[in-house]
Length: 263
Image 1 (cartoon, rainbow, N blue to C red):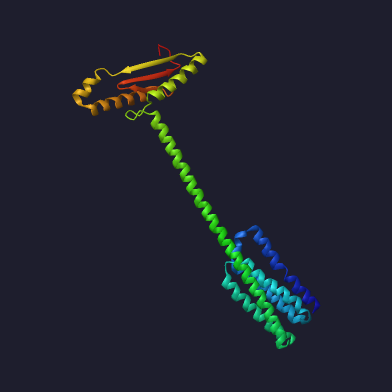
Image 2: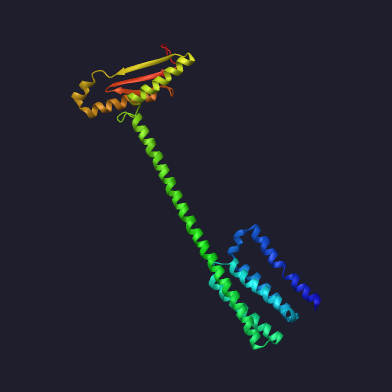
């Protein structure tokens, strides 16, 4: 009987260790509450067998079963009603089996029942607190994620707005090329760069002849279309390093870094 008892106690250690190693490798397995419940039921069966074999040390097993009951609450807190019913049923079966095996009196059985009632109550309160804390943490995490999303959206909106403002400040609204101020800034930088590197730089000035007659004869929308077509032609024909700008009215200019008079 001693060897059988030692075998049962040894077997009761294996499932918790296996469950511990499994949860270390795969923490998401904690969601499979059936596996946790099966492990606890296995331990409960082991302690029941120990009680039948050695009823004189059942007080130690009372403590162990109480720990198992509390562990079920703490490991699976999201199944609070389920674990409460399972723990109450386990406690009733344990107290009944202990009374039948040991022949306990009604008073002793009542004391054991009260003890397990206290354990179940403490387990329920602890699990409820853990559950509430987890829900609060989850709510705070969701709130933080929403706040981050709103912050990212606001940053993106401000970046687009800033880019749009810069583009509007530097672009001629009609022809979509550089306006006079932006053209002069770019021309100044290109002039300084070519001067430092001792490179040639050419400036082309373009003026539409008889532009007033176009407006008077065909109207201002036709004149605007002429300016748009001219700016598109300039943008398509120049090099990538060249700078095209509208100086005002029908006057345009092109800065060509590195281009001498012959080019």
